[in-house]
Length: 201
Image (tube, rainbow, N blue to C red; front, side, top):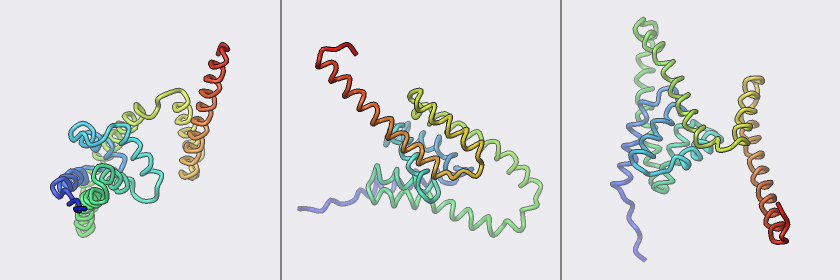
């Protein structure tokens, strides 16, 4: 059997897309959600919005930076292991170079009034990007009242207990989600059985 050659052109395209996304993701992984959605879902048509939301949910649940995790997941989804490596290099290399450069120059410019003013202007923009990402994810994720209730409970718990472990919150969501699916299956099966017996549901 002839070994299938990797599609180097496609791998290069994946690398370039993430290389372009990486330097403009101020504020970390959450800020890159609307940018990645525009590239992956709207322009390239590589993923559906639902797939992308699932990838971000899994990436947030795992150790490591969400930007790196999600880029690797997306790369793997669309291009296998080669795609994952291409996306990983694309997302890491620009920020790595920028961090090295800023680290070398920080001592010189950290008290510069213009730099401080620029950072002061960037912070609210980052908040806006994260809020936009949360809204877009909510449109896909909060599909019914149960999902909305889980979201509300988690938000209240995080606000009320600032030392609450995020892993526990994620585990709560996962366990509750499994329970809901089980209950829905039981209700569906029970309804089908009643219908088969000719009873009114």
